[in-house]
Image (cartoon, rainbow, N blue to C red; front, side, top):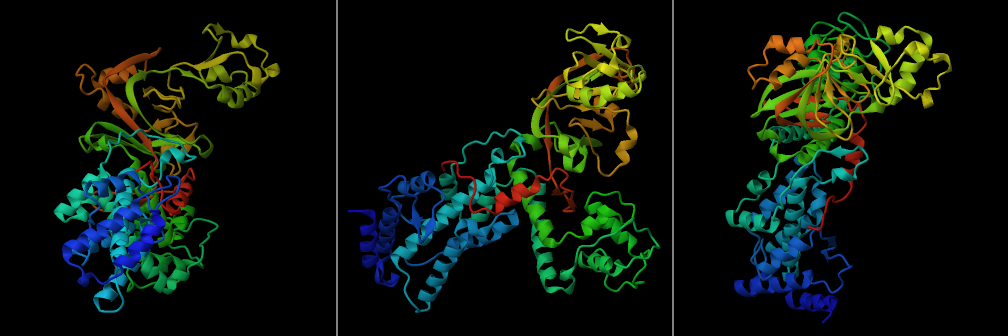
Length: 565
């Protein structure tokens, strides 16, 4: 008998009230319908249940076949509490930054409403309805489990390359579902799939509060705010026509009390602490001066911050599980910061300078294996062509002033004075330029190496003043470190022969000194524009590389990663 014909027959046979069938018969009747609904006589055709395309094929059928297609969420007569819990968890998935409608919520709500009506004597709830609801709840559990564990989006599909490797053992979702049903705890089952970073739960709480803020925003007159613009920075005591708007937004975000007195056009001393709180939240220097960065933060609506939170919760789901349990070097390029973490304790934090927008620092993981004290710098061809040669043409003493040498391809030194620089064509320059060790070296006094296909590494820099800038996307892609001595010291601390004096001496040699580490330390270079700390404080950062929108667009697309589940 063809599948469609069988379903029609079952509709006729089982469209009867639950109370008319004995419990055991009801259970088996629903099982028969489930079996029929999941049969596929055309493997190229997707299975639809109650008008919904099913996400899972392999796991869903394995789950039901192993239980002889008996329903998981009903006995064919009633809907127990566990079914209601599952529906609630689908609704709550928005606080993980995911869309409840990706998990059959509308169809599930429709079936629940039909059941409630039938229970009140208004209409009927058939065996087919029970089967439809059971399958949709199971499929929703499978999709949610997959998305919480791996992320909704496959990062390898993004244009902005994500090369942070993660080993993810097979989840065995059907076994997890059986255990969750046995323990009567869907919530705990999902929580076990959260990213292992403790702050993820705090991020989830933060997103919940942002949704509450959005409700206030929609009902509050300040919700009509327009884009603020300023021509120059506003300092304490300055007057500005938009001060009322600024004050209203500070009150909306609860940085400023409603009952504080005010001088409508003046930036007064009561406002300054509120501006500083906003600046800290958004990663600016907390100087209390209202500049372009502060105005950008004030222009962010709750929906903007909700989107940013959702994007970064997805990024957390892509991170390796074992990062939290080991010694690791984390660099968040959007925050311009490096953290050295061991056994969940942050042993060192340092400001960094990262790649410019058009030389953006990639997202990847590698292993740091050695240091180079007093490094030379072999200048990349692109920099030689675009920066060094034009500088030499303007100033014949440029190479000497920068302690640079000209070398052949096999490393033989060439007298720079023997080259007619005015006739040099930058596109076919046959030599290599190398900067020798010293205070002027662009790599500073030490570099930290973790071999990778991007030729990115961490290094010192002589341009120390740049670390005072808020926007530190200034390099050609490598990561410049504000605290190179401290970093070297902590990496070498397990070897007592590396005293402070020895490290400082090694940083001022006339030639390179390579030092292999006694272990390989994971380096993870990532890009987070939102996170919380362990106390729940929220931190937002500018999307300096314009990577967020691609993820948001993918998150808003129906469904997501499937991978033959």
